[in-house]
Length: 112
Length: 116
Image (cartoon, rainbow over all chains, first blue to last red; front, side, top):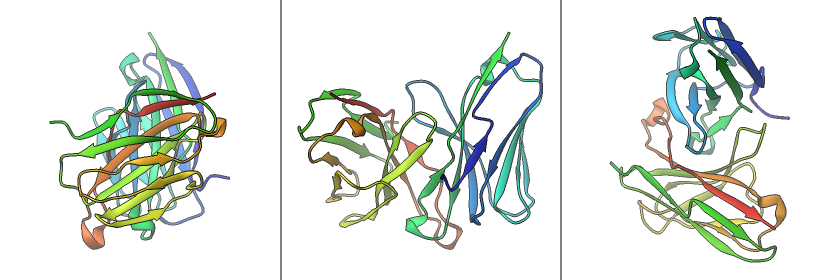
């Protein structure tokens, strides 16, 4: 059982559709980070949320941190083929050197 | 702008062989870590280091050793490779913001390892 559960695991949508990816846990995190990974590359940070209830926007991407700092969501508006990739959430806890615990990832495909 | 450099990019080992995956960063980050990525499992922490001379175990440390003799380098050693260690390995570095936690993790491009 993973500490961070991401859903859905796979998502295939048409260009222009909206989608939401969820990242849930029973543990509290000091921060929650969202990464995007392209094939053959390492993950690259999209955003960090720190405060419970925090909402951050990055163009068409909206990230939210739950009030209790146990869960987060990523919403993409009007998805484009360039959004295709693996989206990973990662939680930071105040132990283990603040190393990251990752969710299982959501593989998104946006078809033109 | 090298960032985090991992070598090799690809490796095939026979069961029982040993090898070292190299990782170097040029950002003077004190924190370094090794993850393995398997399908549907995200990234799982193998070992990490909070500074030169200091290492600790992560979630899946068995079968791996690490050392941190310098700030820049953090090699991962497979002692006796097993098929279960077939995976993609990522090295990452970050620095501490003190009570505010760590910065984002900067990842290398990964090493794809196959054990036959």
